[in-house]
Image (cartoon, rainbow, N blue to C red; front, side, top):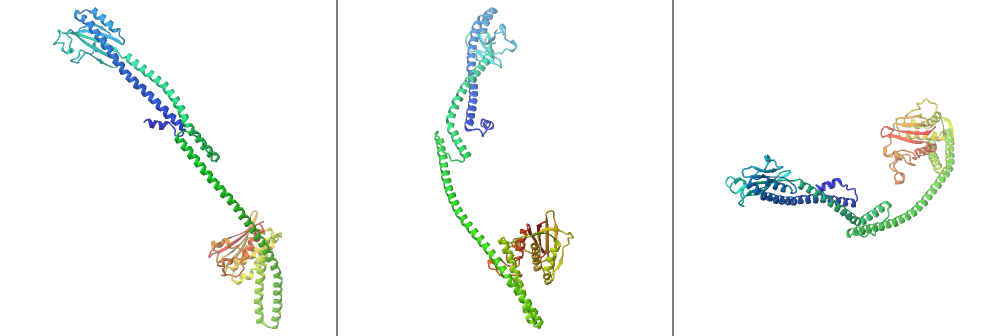
Length: 517
C-alpha cells in the first residue's frame, strides 16, 4: 500500500535527488508517526499498570481504615477513611458497605450502578469501563481468600466491601501528552535527520547531476565532451563508460571527416573531368551542327540542279517519244526530291542545335497558313485514300508568330498523320484562349503505344521502328527519317510553345500545338 501511494504521488519525471528525498522523507514521516503511536501505546500500558498499583494500594488502605468502621458501624470513621482516599490523584469516589450490603459511607458513587465483585477466591480486584476503574476489596477479620458470594456461609469473618472509583482522564491525558511529546521529539529528530540526509544525498548525487549536465550539453552542442567526475564506484564507472563512448564517437567522426574530405576531393576531380567532357561534347556537337549546316547547305544546290536537269531531260525524251527512259528518270527525280527533303530537315535541325535558326515574327491570319499546309500534303491524302476534314472553327484569328515555322510544323504533323493512317480520317482544327491558341491534328490511324509516347519527339526515331538506330536495329515499317516530329517540337519551343500528344492504339492520335497569341 505504501509503495502504491509513493508511485501515485511521486512523479517519475522528478530528478533522482528529489525522488530519493521524497522516499526518505516519506519513510521518516511514517516511521515518526508509527514510533509516536507505539510509544504512546506502550507508555499508556505502563502508566495504567502504575495507576492500577497505586489504586490497589489506596483500596487496601481504605479497607484497613474502614475495618474499624465496619466493626463499630461508625459512619464517622468511614467518612474520614474515604476523604483520605479521595486525596489520591484520579480517585473520584469511594464507598464502604457492610456484609449486609448496607452503605456505611459513600462519596460520588452511584449505588445503582455499583459493580458487585463476582470473582470467587479473590478478596481484591477491579473492573473498568470507558471512563472509570472500579476497585474493590473484601474486608474480613480472618485473612483468607473468601469472595463476596460466601457471605452467607462466613458472616462471622466477612465485615464488608470497600470500593474505590478511579477516573481514566489522567490516563487518557497522560497518553495524549506522551504521544504529542513523542511526536514533537520525533518531528525534531526527523527534521534533523532530513537535513543530514539532504546533505548526504546532495553529496552523493552531485556527481550524477554533473554527469547528467555534461551529457545534456553534449547532446545540445553536438560536441563530444569528456567527464572527469569522481564519486562512488558506480558513478566512476558511468563516467568512464561515457568518456569511452565520447572517444569512440570522436574517432568515428574523424574517420567520417577523412572519408568526406577524400570523397570531396574525388568528386572535385570527377566533376572537373565531367565538365571537361561536357565542354568537349558541347564543342563537338556545335562543330557537328555547324558542319552539317554547311554541308547540307552546300548539298542543296547540286541536288536542286540535278532535279532541274532531270526535268529538262524528261521534256526532251517526252518530245522524242522515249517513254521508257521517262519512267526511269521519274524514279530518279522522286529519289532526288526525297534526298532534298532529308537535306532540308538535317539543315533545319542543325541550325536549331547550333543556335543559328532565326525567328521572324509577324502578324498573320491563321486560316490561310493552315490552307497552305493542307495544299502541301494533298498528294499524301490521295496516296492512302484518307478523308480530310478542314478547320471547323469559323473565327478569323490573327496571331503574331513566324509564318514559315508555323506552316512547317503543321505540314510535318499532317504528313505524319497521312503516313500512319490508311483509308481513315485526318482532321485539322484550332482553338483560341486568352493568351494562347492551339492547333489540333487528329487521325484515325493505328495509334501510338503509351510506352513510346515519351520518345516520339527524339531525333531519328519512328514509331514503327523496332528500336533506336544507335542500338543496332534497322527494322523499319514506314518510310522517313524520323526528324519531322523532332524538328516540329524544336520549332514550337522556339516560338514559345509546346507540342503534346494523346493516342489510343487502334483508335488514333491527336497532336496539339499550343503557341502564344
